[in-house]
Length: 274
Ligand SMILES: NC(=O)c1ccc[n+]([C@@H]2O[C@H](COP(=O)([O-])OP(=O)(O)OC[C@H]3O[C@@H](n4cnc5c(N)ncnc54)[C@H](OP(=O)(O)O)[C@@H]3O)[C@@H](O)[C@H]2O)c1
Image 1 (cartoon, helix red, strand yellow):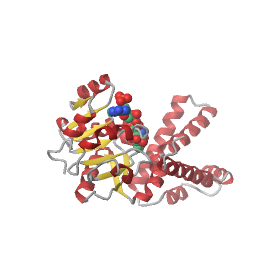
Image 2 (spheres, rainbow, N blue to C red):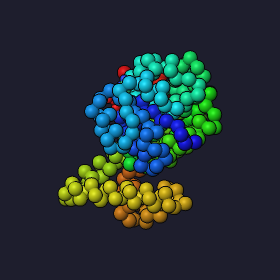
Image 3 (cartoon, rainbow, N blue to C red):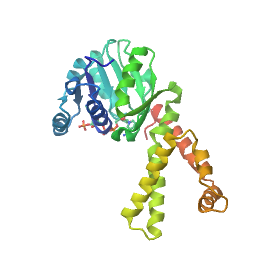
Image 4 (tube, protein in one colour):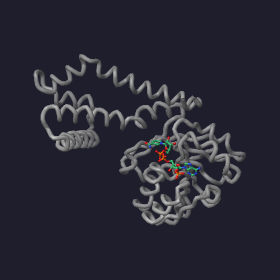
């Protein structure tokens, strides 16, 4: 679907770079099919040197040259930046936005034309090519646009199509999710250090434990609950640990955290950014 197309990364920061890097490294497109913009000229020169892509400090040039425009700006600056280039974005282009909380309807309303829009919520493991990118379609987006978005984001992991009303829950679960995992890892490393391990060893033990558990889960047909029961013998060490977590309402605490993120995503989408 991307053959012969130019992909423009508008706001090539962390996520934008992860995407363009994934696309180039996976040979999904040629480097000269990518054009990236941001304000920092030194950072642009680095992107050009490292990935061999085209760069520009001029967002209008980017949207004119690109067939697929990936908007990887922070939500706070997106309206102003898009307003400046909106007149050059026509219905024959595809706009893919990863900005948290900005709906397809809000994006569509910024253009005079019936521009196809796809909204995506990748997560930070995209930086290592192992993200998950749920996406939804705006009212003018067709199957071909979904396939293009799919191809772009498959460069940094897995994709899944969802209804737009699930984008806030997606933000709360997989978008914010890596931070819950990092927090649990932090707590386990602290416990390891308190039991006498040097921090570097505690981090290695915890990191490989998470990696191994995730790999096992992805290769097994069993659910997390089934795997947990498999390793929990009555009266054993895991039983002692899980019973302690249960006595402190671990599941309820985690659910409440996810629900709070969902609520915040909803508020941000309504324009409450304070
Ligand atoms: N990071 C995540 O885990 C994650 C997950 C899902 C979705 N997202 C979404 O992805 C988007 C980007 O996040 P990020 O973490 O990649 O942020 P980021 O690293 O700050 O990237 C945003 C980029 O926009 C550029 N920019 C700002 N003003 C600009 C302008 N006027 N013209 C052109 N470029 C401009 C900035 O570069 P200059 O300062 O050089 O202009 C910056 O590099 C956000 O909307 C966020 O909600 C992020």
